[in-house]
Length: 150
Image (cartoon, rainbow, N blue to C red; front, side):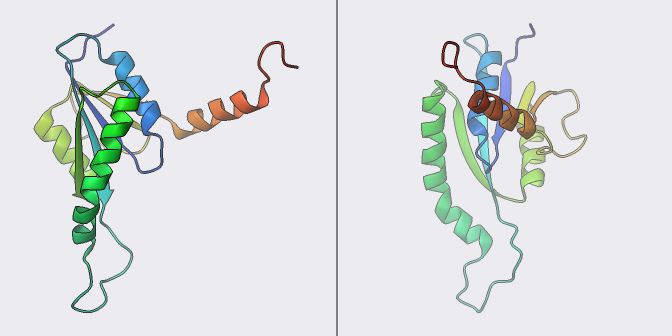
């Protein structure tokens, strides 16, 4: 198995972060592995601010960022990844992820399918987790009784 030193895990807003973190933890072998877990607050909105006192999307995200970071750190602790670095950024998701990949230069990116920009991670291994597989596993768990419980 290949040893990864720098693993990037972008956490989506759709609640699949624990699965990504579990996969990344399986691949984080060795004491010298660094892991950066990023949560992007998407500031694109479908409407224009109303009036001069309106809160711009970036301002709202900046106010939410400390609470989101606390939740992200708790999520890391629940997954035995308290040693990983948690980071919250805001803006357009794919642009920010492309920037993080370019600047941090990870060996591996663990992300949901369709979350990453096309062709940005040349020379970087990418492990994508399909949302369908998550729901399929949940459905299987709910529809198959435990052994001895027919």
